[in-house]
Each structure stands twice: as C-alpha cells, then as structure tokens.
Length: 240
Length: 240
DNA sequence: CTACAGCATCTTGTAGACAATAAGCAATAG
DNA sequence: CTATTGCTTATTGTCTACAAGATGCTGTAG
View 1 (spheres, rainbow over the protein chains, first blue to last red):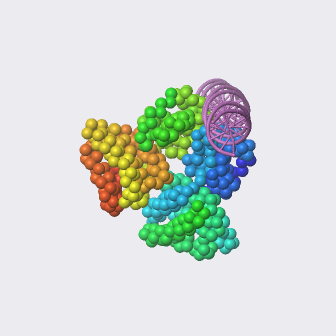
View 2 (view 1 turned 90 degrees about the horizontal axis):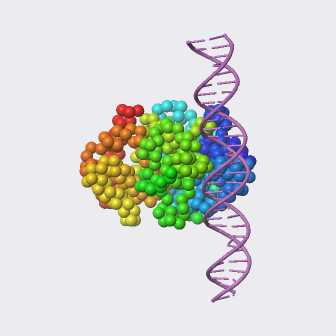
View 3 (view 1 turned 180 degrees about the vertical axis):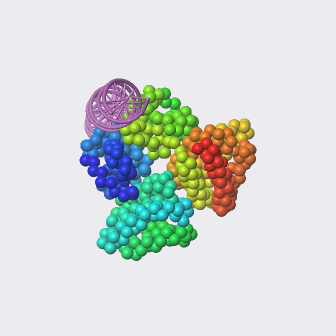
C-alpha cells in the first residue's frame, strides 16, 4: 500500500507542500515515491527484477500509473528497462560510482561559483536548519540519520545558487549516490570517522559560504569531496 | 503517424542502431521521439497545450504509451504537466535561459577537464566527423544545418570524457537549448557572424583538444561559450 | 448590466482485458 | 549423457472503457 510520508529532498521527488494541499497527488507520483523509497532503503536490491504485476498488488494500483512511475525512475537512473524484458533496479559498476562522484563534485562547485556570495539571505536558511539537524543527529549518536541529514545539508547548500536545473540534476545524482550506499551497506557504518568531527566539518563549510569567501569555500569543498570520494571509492573497490 | 527518421544525438533519444535491429522500438520511444522532434522544430509552440486525445490520433497510438512518453519528455524538461490540467510545451523565461546556458557551460568544462588529454583516440572520431559535417554545411551556405551540426559537434566533444551521465545531462541541456531557439526564431538566423569563420572556430577548438593542452582548450571554450551566451541572452532580452 | 451559481462538456486519471513476445522446461535425437 | 528444438507459461506492450475532476457557458438574481 502506498504510504507517502514525504522525506527530505534526497529521498523523495516531493511536490511542493503548497501544491500538494491543493492538488491531490496522482498515483504516478505516489508510486514513484514509494518505489524510490524502497530502492534507496535497500528493500529492492540492485539487479532485482521489478515485476509489474507484483508491484501493482503491493501498491494497490493498476499497471498504467505504475508503468508511468517506472519511466520517471528510469530517467532518474534508479532503474533500467530492457524492452520486452522488464525493469530492474540499477546495478552500479565502479565506473558508475566514479561518474556519480565526479558529476556531484562538479555540480557542487558550480553552485558555489554561482551562489557565493549569497545575494538572498533566505537561501541560506535551509542549509542552516539542515546543519542543526546534523548536529542533533551527531549528539544522539545516530549515524544513519546523520548521513541522511548530511545529504539534505548538501542539497540545501546547492540551493544557494537559486538554480532550478542545477537543483534537479544534483538531486538526481544524490539519489544515485544513495543507491551506491544501498549497494555496500558497509559504507553506512564505516563512512565517517567521528560524528562530532563530521558535523563540525560541515559547520565550517557553511560558515565559509556565509562569509562570502568563494575561493575559501571552494577549497574547503574540494577536501570535503575528496574525503567522500576516497571513502566511497575504497569501499566500492572492496565490495565490487 | 509516427515517423522515426532518427536524427543526430541532439534531436532524438535514439537507440543504438544495433539494438534497434534486434528489438523493435516500443511505441513509447517512438512517440517520445516524434513529439520531441515536433517540439524542437517549433511545430508545437512553447506554452501550447498537448491534448492527449489529439496526439493519440495524430500518432495513431493509444493513450497509455503516449502518457509514458509524456513522462519522459517531462523529465527532459521539454514539457510541464500540471495535475488534472494537462501537459504543455515548456515556456522558458529569461532565468530558464540563464540556467540552461550556465549549466551547459559547466558541463562542457567538466568534459574537458576529465577528457583532456584524450586517452582513447577513438573518442575523437565522432567530433572529427561532426566537424567535417559542419564544414560541409558552411561550404553549402546552409545556416540552419550548420547550427544543428554545431550541436552535434559539441555533443561529440563532450563525449571525449567517456562519461555516460555527463553525456545524458548534456544532451538534456542541449535539447532545452534547442527549445530556446524554437522560441526565438531570429536566433536561428542572426546567431552567427560568418559561416566559414564559425566552422573555423570549431576546428580550432578541436585542434586544441587533440593537442592535449587542457588549459588552452578550456580557455578557447570559455570565449567560445561567451559568444553563444551573449547572442542568446541578447536575443532573449529582445523577444522575452 | 454585472456577478455568482449551477450545469454540461470535455479532458485527464485509472482500471481491467487482450495480444505478442521472451524465458524456461521438457522431450527427443544424436 | 548432452545438445537442440519445440512447447508451455509468464510477463510485458498495448488497447478500450469507465470514473472523477476541471473548465467554460448559460441562466438568474441583485
């Protein structure tokens, strides 16, 4: 059954909360969100075949909206559809991981180059609250939640560029990154060194962004991304 | 009626010629290609409502595959769908144009940074042949064809990075750029100064790429993009 | 004359059914 | 015993039909 408890930007395709009040979301949207959630949570494993009939009864919808949802997920890179063969959860090779990480890095740098110094202070609010959420997770020693909060923070940070297409592309890349993590569950545990240090690094990054020093922020972002890249690449090399 | 005379990478979603021989393309693919073509050629104007029933009889298919094609085009940014209201060809604001051009620039730079020096010489082949096509168009004084060939050249150039996701994102941006041009038809005529000079600039760019001098190629790309940006931005300011 | 309410029509959203193809299995021949 | 061929089954691709909601018009009241 569809359960659309909309999560952060990294998790859902999420319509704006305003429009969702006015327009009841279509089954296509709900189905896409539900399946995306199950893929990213690891309930559907990479490579797993997604039987349409099975999904229809699982979500209590019929096939047309389900198939439309598949198209959406396909364009997001979460599933691949082979004609007459069916749809499968994307299996990521090491090259895919490389592509995802490099593209993410470029998009983040673009956001900083366009967005710093921040013209509209309101654009920083989401990043600030996301950081608070991170620090809360760190204080509670909730590593899994911290990772997700980190994704939301990065997404919010990219938002300072006030660039719709950049946001869209970045969200897509982030989702695939979450798929990487679903592949090697170890990453979820060994990714980060120390929770407080992790949160502190992100606070430092945000402060540099707020200061308006573009080059300093970009430099920090570089080492920031470097760390993630190494962790993920090592991890992928171990398991892949 | 669907007429899938597959064009260059900028125009079609184009399945590989090999697989198209084995697997008959689905109606969804054919419909998406056909509609995309009509949108980019200007047959369907920006803002125009796309009636499902009308499209079904125009393409001689039924609504389910058509609706799936809509999802694809929606994710490509060519149409927008408002729930219970219908689908419309995307209307681009000046900010949209700004976003498209900046994103394109970043993606091209990324391709150069990752792809130069070119490791696999075969990756340069598509760019070389695309350039020849450009020069042919210039010689024949076919301005419209030259512009399209230019798009194919740039797409081929991005291909040197050997980066699937980058290619995909770039193709998407390019399609929206073509949508810009469908908006202001003037651009198609006044965009370029001199046909031969235009082709020569592109040859120069390719030669720098082939030489392996990344910085020089990036510098040339910068002025290259600068020109397009100004032309497009001015043009959009005039008409938008 | 204008504004609001109610209705008719049209369009989208969804469901269920049919047809075509691919995968898996079994039987037979070598 | 193995490989190949034919069939069976299951799953995708597509179509037609029904339901729900939105738009536009018309009629009436102020």
